[in-house]
Amino acid sequence: TLHQLFFEQCRFHHHALRYFHSKVFLHAHSYFSRDFSGFCAGSQEYSFALLRKIGQDNFMLAVEVKGLVKRYPNKVAVDGIDLEIIKGEIFALLGPNGAGKTTTVEILEGYRKRDGGSVSVLGIDPDLGDAEWRNRIGIVLQSTKDGEELTVFEVVSHFSHYYKNPRDPLQVIEEVGLQEKRNARIETLSGGQRRRLDVALGIIGNPEILFL
Image (cartoon, rainbow, N blue to C red; front, top):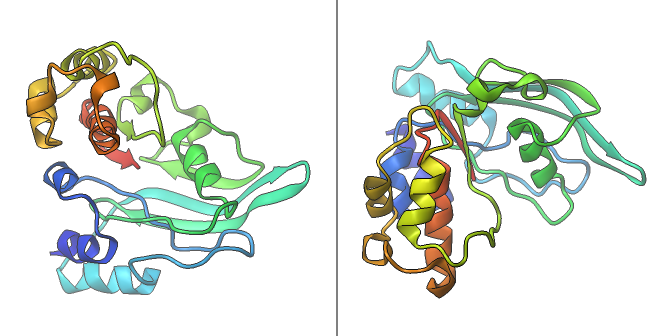
């Protein structure tokens, strides 16, 4: 399937694969300033060719970006990016430090304002996204240090209350492979186990699109 082909290209964690099927993912099809080093799943034309091959001609866009620009006082971090990300597609955004990856993702998430261009995520401009829109997206942060004294179950259960239609915390904990650690305090987890917990917090709200 299309999902399997993209997973073979990008080598995502196998625990996340259970949830990611039929969801929406992020992969850039454009260039970041002058430092962009490429992307893992091939060109946009290759992606659309795969869709046509499996009969998904009538696809819908989850993310549409045109001419995205973000400037800082001494640098242009994002310079005219165009993206089209299809619902059900898995995308990965790769590049060297300072290429604009985090800035772009934060703009798509609605956490950073852009200086130019247009952005649509699930049909909404992130700058105008309300609580209803935020209920539809999931975010896996780069790092977290909150709730060190809480157990895995306590923190996942707590985050579930932020969403209108959350998933079952115990099921999510099992899907990310932390069922044996559900009563362990976060401060006792290994680095890899913490990343699994971060994924659990990203998917507990049953999002339509997940940013990693």
